[in-house]
Length: 271
Image 1 (cartoon, rainbow, N blue to C red):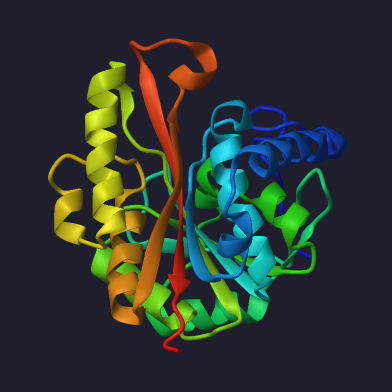
Image 2 (tube, rainbow, N blue to C red):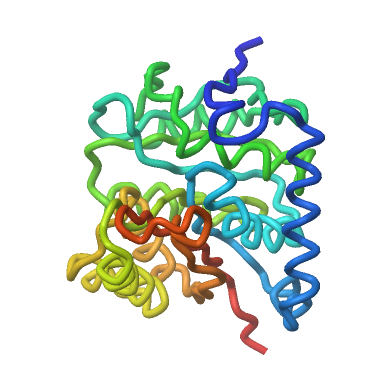
């Protein structure tokens, strides 16, 4: 059995499953206490989410909002798409794994879907690309909210957003499949400048306008964001921005800020 080992457990998130569960409980208590329209969000037909990938202490709350909503949808399959930070690759690599390791227990890998994507798009599996935190930090959330879901990890490098959007279009054509887009926003600006760059990113998502992304958005996962925006337009999905914050909210440092946001993409009823 081929297992995708956890490589940033104990760094970006706790290696203790109990600690992760207690953390998520705290996040959800805060949501239940301060957010009034959660039931409305849970009722939406969520087909995709955009989430950050920093250490949980910085971006875990922001990511959790989206995963909790996705959990209510209960998709059977999820494809997690994130940028490669450690190795250079052309195009994208598909994870061919029977299981994905997390501190909460292993997720089941969707080998059949992985092989279909490889065949349909001429992709390959580069094992080095999958020692990647942008995708891995999402797996514990998936295990918590969707313990029986099957997963495929997709890591991209130098890639055409339109080509990646074609992959997402295929995934979204399956109503039992959801897409997770992993990205942080601006990196290491003063707080006010970071917020200006991040507002461009969020405006582009909210208006599903890929052109706006290139007017100042500096997200590390901008390729995945653009691909999702293109697919949202193609599939008639509606974006909902859920949460935005920066590293300054955690550490108080307003001179070297990283931005984080989450969003969902929903299929609206025609009734």
